[in-house]
Amino acid sequence: MTHKVLLLPGDGIGPEIAVQAKRLLHACQDAGLDIDIDEALVGGAAYDAHLDPLPPETLQKAKAADAILLGAVGGPKWDTLEDLSKRPEKGLLGLRKNLGLFGNLRPAMLYPQLASASSLKPELVSGLDIMIVRELTGGIYFGQPRGIEVRDGQRVGFNTYIYAESEIERIGRVAFEMARKRGKKLCSVDKANVLEVTILWREVMNRLAQEYMDVELTHMYVDNAAMQLVREPKQFDVVVTGNMFGDILSDAAAMLTGSIGMLPSASLNESGQGMYEPCHGSAPDIAGKNLANPLAMMLSVAMMLRYSLAENAMAERIEAAVGKVLDDGLRTADIASEGMQTIGTDAMGDAVLAAFAQQA
Ligand code: IPM
Ligand code: MG
Image 1 (cartoon, helix red, strand yellow):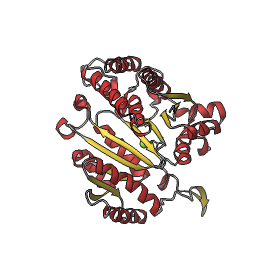
Image 2 (cartoon, protein in one colour):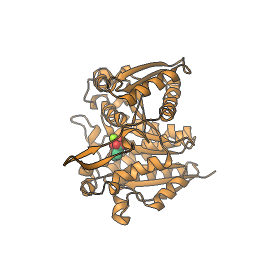
Image 3 (cartoon, rainbow, N blue to C red):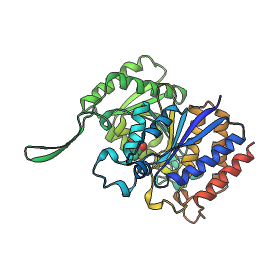
Image 4 (cartoon, protein in one colour):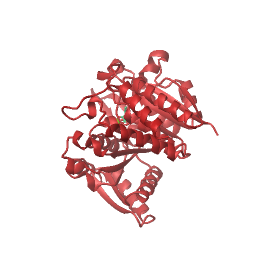
C-alpha cells in the first residue's frame, strides 16, 4: 500500500531542512519504501501567498495524508500582524486542532557523542532518555473565552485554562502506555497547589494509575519539574503534562541534550495519523545561510516511519546513519564543542545520506 506523505516546509530554516528530509525520503524510496510525497504551504509562507497561514488546500491535503512532515513556522516578518488569526503559528495550531493531534511525543535523548555539547556536566546528562508526553489540542492554548477587550476603562487580556476529563484521560493513557514500554515510571506535571484544572488532572491520572499497576506514577508541580530537569534530569522516564507546561518543559529538556537541533517530535491522533516535526523553531536569524542543523528534521522522518508507517527497520537505519555521522565527528555549529570544525546544512545532509546508503 502506498503511504501518502505531506511535506510542509514552512518558514525560516524550515525550507532548508525540508530539502534534506526530502532527499532522505527519496533515499528511502530507493530502498523500497512505498510512499507518495506531496508538498504544501503553511505558516508565513502560506500567508504571503494566500493571506491565510492554513489555506483550505493545505488542510485538505493534510487530512488525506497518512503522515505529515513539517519544518517550522513563524518569523519576525509576521510578528507584527495585528490579526492573531493570520499569524504563522495559527497554521500550526490549526493543523493540530483540525487533525485532532492531541498526543505530542517529545523525546529528549542524548547522543553519547554530544555529551560535551550540553550546558550541563556530562555526568548529569550521559545516558539521558526522557519522553515528554504533551497534550496538544487543549488547555490554555485553545480554551474559550479568550481575547483582549476593554473592561472598566482599561484593556484586559484573558485566556481560559480548561481540560475535560476525557481529554486528560486520553493523554494519560498515551503516557501510561508509553511508560509501560519504557522504564515504567511516569511523572505527571501540574500546578495542583493553585489551579483547579490541574487538581482534576491529578485526580484523573491517579484513577488511571489503578489500571496500570505496573507503572509507578508520581506527581510534580511544574516549577519544581523545571528545577529538577536541570538539577537531576535522569530521574525522569516519561513525563505527562498539559499543553502550555509541555511547551515550556520540552524546550528545557531538549536543551539538556546539547541542542534543540537534534530532537524530533510526533503528534498523533486517535486514528494513528501523525504529524512529525523538529522540536526547534524556524530560527529566522540563521535562515538561508546553510547553518541550520537538519538532524532533528531527518530524525523526524525516522519517527514518522516508526509511528505512522510501521517501518521500524527503515527508521532504525536512519537513526544509525545519524549516529555514524556523529561518530565521524561531523557537527553543525549548534552541536559543535569548542575547537571542532563545523559543516553546513547541505554537507550534514550529504553525510547522513551517505551513511544511510552504507547501511544497506
Ligand atoms: C512548539 C512551538 C509552538 C507551540 C508554537 C510555534 C505555536 O513552540 O511546537 O513547541 O507553542 O506549541
Ligand atoms: Mg515550543
